[in-house]
Length: 345
Image 1 (cartoon, rainbow, N blue to C red):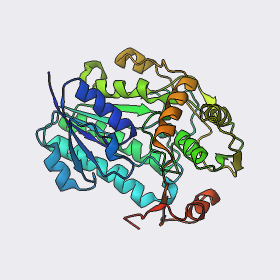
Image 2: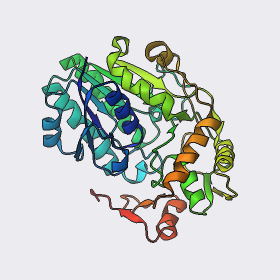
Image 3: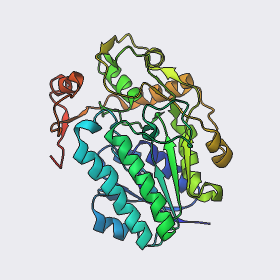
Image 4: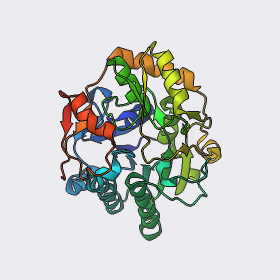
């Protein structure tokens, strides 16, 4: 049965793939995106698009009116940068999310799907399970956990049915390569195409499970239509983990590159991050079927086709103290880059 659906962040990497799935299923889809990390070229031609920020609560109230399902994929996922743009992080990722939850409650939305993050687990002891107590390690993870808790309260208090998904290290076609602070594969490929070094913080032995978009996005889209997923928290992503050194070698091979790896001082980050996905397999029929080497080859072909992206550099961070030297160097390394001026600074 056709549903009226609103996707926040639907011009972004994961969001645009979710939108494509929903449109192909015959639903009436509207998209909201501020295009800070999304691109118009990612937009499906069979949707209604509004360029706007989720921080505009009055507009969100009007756009969510009469919608059956809301998918919230609009966030600035800057784990490494979030300690230095704290006000922006909480305004966009918490207050913006609460605007959506308020509007969903008032407009009697039938299902609210929220893409949280593996960042809520913090250092923890991987593989992370949904039963583990979240201990987020940075403001980004704190913001995601805050929204999870608010959704739980919204269900208990107002009956807002929801699904909370915790994807991790998703990569693939349409990843925004113009962000030099996040999305490690996008950073690697973009710098390779620009003839620059591949940056690795620390010794490169930190591990992650990298999840291909083609495996993850369909499950996110389907989750709103699976009753067993109601009011559940579900990890979703690959089960096999790799070191960042391995990732760099596989990426260089896929890009046919001889770019040098540049080892940088370690930054404060979770060293090992991967999760159990038994629940996603049981409830969402999730299948982790794309080997990392194959997924990276597909992404590399796409990246070469679209070409390098000029990075978007933060001109004004809120806190300079402790800012990694490489982040500071970006300002001089890309003198012609588009500056992202912190709107709240």
